[in-house]
Image (cartoon, rainbow, N blue to C red; front, side, top):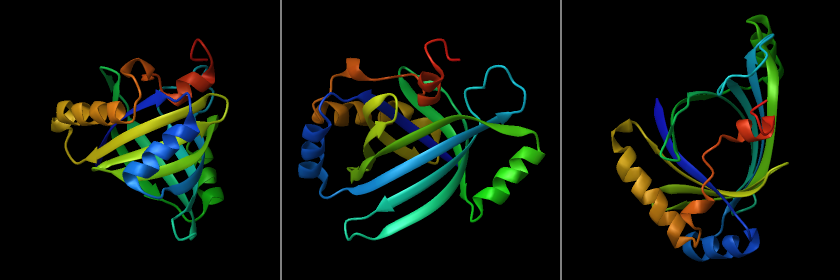
Length: 187
């Protein structure tokens, strides 16, 4: 079990922010992530969280390419603009077989999301600079912990990192990407 404490903020100048991040945290890993969210069949409105199948292609600093398929499900919550998610995640080797299992238990694909960018580890924080197709550029800051008791301290660390990156707090986006991708009314 992992508690994921994260925030995301809109980015105006992705190239400038990438330079800042490289100066602070070194050479990044490049990534491309394709997500498909699965929900109960026949639902009019998708719930805030479903089962996510994520295909990830990562290229590390040495040029090594890794492809992985992750399955994630979460209990999502937003506390003062910061996401606090109880997250469960595991790897699968056969995406098509897992999708067939989801269909057989009554789920169907819903919202899809694609993002690509770069990732760094900086002072115990995972930092991603990502372009989300259809939405724009974001910086995501994340701390993983085994206990939710440190939310206030993690929030302080995330906000300090955001400030160090030169991004104002009013650029924080508290909506989930899936909500934003569904449209202005969450459809």
